[in-house]
Every structure is written in C-alpha cells, then in structure tokens.
Image 1 (cartoon, rainbow, N blue to C red):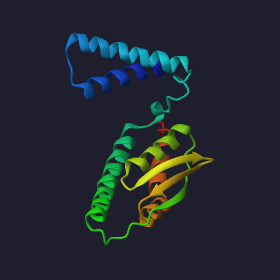
Image 2 (cartoon, helix red, strand yellow):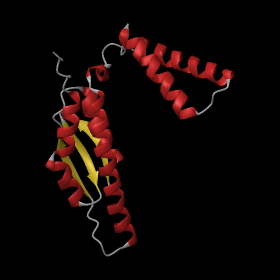
Image 3 (cartoon, rainbow, N blue to C red):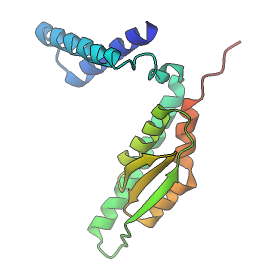
Length: 163
C-alpha cells in the first residue's frame, strides 16, 4: 500500500510542478489523471514490483543527476563543435555496452541516460548489453570506460541502515 500511495503522490506532485496550473478545475482533472494512471499501473500488476525507487537514497539521485547534467553539457558542446566545424571527424559507430545493473529499472535508467547524452542513442537492450549508436568512436569509448554504468549501478544499492 505504501508503494501505491507514493506512486500517486509522486504523480500528483510531478503533474503540479510541470503543469503550472493552479485552477481548481485543472487541479481536479490532474488528480483524476493521476488516479487513472495508478489504476492502469495497478491493473498491470506493477505497483509493488516496479517501485524500486523507494529503496534508493535521495542523495545518490541528486549526485547522479548533477553528474549526468554535466555529461549532457559536455556532449552538447562536442556535438555542436562537430556540426559547426565540418573538418572535425564524425565516425558513426554501433557499440555493445555491458550493463551491470541487477534490476530492469536500473538497466532502463542506464539506457535512458545514454540516450539523453547527445551523440549517443540506445537502440536495443538484450542479455545485459545495450546496443548504442554513437556519433563518434570517442563517445562509444567513453561508454566502454564504464563510468556511467558504475554510477547507475550505485543507484540500485539499498541505503545502509543507520545505527
């Protein structure tokens, strides 16, 4: 039940922050939308099975989000330079990146993080490997380095109990 309540609250808060509407009618429609999404997710029997985010520490997420935003900024600059300076090499490549995450949610976060980074797109996820199209071999090599994989895997580890 705690997972259901946290899902509904998360959906409602996200809707309110992203919509920016505070009229009673729109708040009511937003609440109905959140309940409808919860109904669909509950009918699919995913509420208690996919709520792994409750096991994660908020500080880890903030640290990862800041690191990912930095990676996105650096990749944006690299892609922009390659577009504006045609002499810079573009060497499209497809790479298979090992995924060490233990959960499906972890693998999805990893694949989405790759896609969010300009110049790389996750194409497929099969048997613990993500097939990635990279704009340059350097971008593929950076993923082979495993830094993003290690950081996403660290997000999955449960918080240590406090004494």
